[in-house]
Image (cartoon, rainbow, N blue to C red):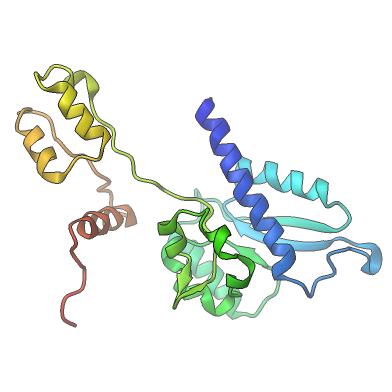
Length: 228
């Protein structure tokens, strides 16, 4: 329950920041809503989660009559990452103007810069310092900021405390695990358990396998590319 509250607070903060940014990124819109007496509509495409809905409702209530965020739901259970990428790319190639703000996987940022507005002038250095530097790095292309992080996946490692506690040097091992154990230490730890797999990873036939492979490779200072 505590984690759920923390998650809601975090995503609420990020989404509110996103929608406030919309106001300044699209200055050509009549944000006062006085023209024709109608609220300006901002179309936001993403997997619309319950957290999104709550924040959008709060935002629309606060700026009622001025700005209305209209969610366009692209749920993960119906659209894979590649489906969403191709759907959005085809949409923007058609030069339609019915999507103002959209979410893409972090690896697709460079592809979508042709349809995006540079954001550096809207995010001073002190604001950027509040964002995880590795997350922010994925939002830039050619040293220009084109997006801001919304959903961030941070890798976690779970371990069997009941098994570790049976070892004579359990306290020392647990301290290493809590402080990011090295691969060498992890392999040595495996030698103390003869029957259990010592590292379980995402190995289904989807992009997660490539993601974890490149993460491990980068951690070992390796590269997917060699020569040409």
